[in-house]
Image 1: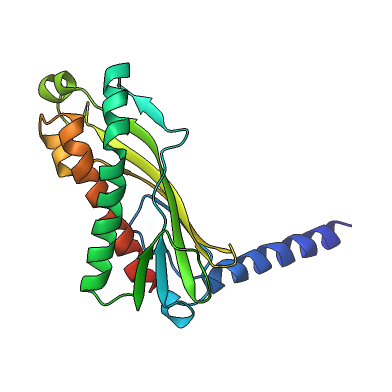
Image 2: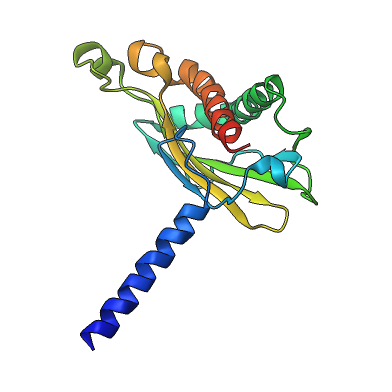
Amino acid sequence: MKKILLALFLVLVTSSLALSADTLPKPEALSEETIFLTEKISANYDTLVIKDFSAEGAEYSRVNDEEKAEIIKMMPLLMNNIADALTAELKSKGIFKNIVRNSTPTGRQIILEGKISEFNAGSKAMKMFVGFGAGKAYLKFKGRFVDASGKELAIFEDRETGYLGSMSLMSYDELFPYQARSIGENLARFLIKLY
């Protein structure tokens, strides 16, 4: 019985290693990445569809009601900054034949779906008196890439502070637009390595 269990265990370990060996390596552009692709994106997809990020269910940290209302007002700007930065980076490298926003996915398309999961306004006092990154404002985001059938190709999560968020005394309303652009740039680096 012990030999059968050991043999079964070895088969499971070997098959799980074989499955993970078949997927592409992580790009290491974001803090958490799971890749399901077994070949480069360019082998099967020629168009990227960028869906607008949402903030549904987002956590608001170090934010009062007035600040939350201001953040909600700036959402269109943040979403545009993510998409514009991602598009500009990919186009500058000649990645994807077509890049479109919010279209209905069909055929050889990969779709970006994402959301901002936390808005942290930070603390100027902590930045000034504690330093070392304490009190920094940041945006936390997560999402996935799927194909037109809905099959997951990659999932990710990260937190964007940017150098301004940890080193300056700028407020969240000045920082968030820069951080949204950085999210787009980081997603571009992620895709470029998988392309």
